[in-house]
Image (cartoon, rainbow, N blue to C red; front, side, top):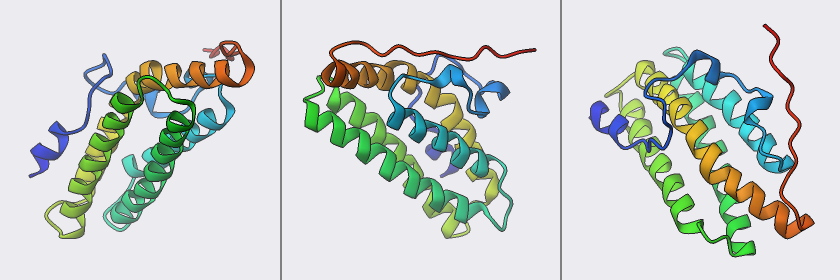
Length: 163
């Protein structure tokens, strides 16, 4: 069952494995839409808690992610419906795949078929998936929303990482 769970996580990211640097929010992830950017920052925080969970916190962190993901995805889907976003169905389909994977992981953990290691692997898969999703699907949505609201594409200022 656990192998099936990982195969259902959508992989629109070009990376095969999660770069450890992609597990922490940075300005590099900004898309130029304040509400969307705030939700994405929260995504990183919630998924990081899943990645670092233990046997006592695994289910709680998964439930926290479920709450976040539903609100996050429904908010984006509301914006897409309200503005007639052309790629809404494709975008929503990716959300449904993540929620389906989440349901499988939640079932496995809540029935003691799996433990925190599955939650951690799921978090790692989410970190691998998310940059591609955000770079393609969410950046297009950000541009669309900003054009509708302001009549122009977003301008995003990002701080450079200092080594």
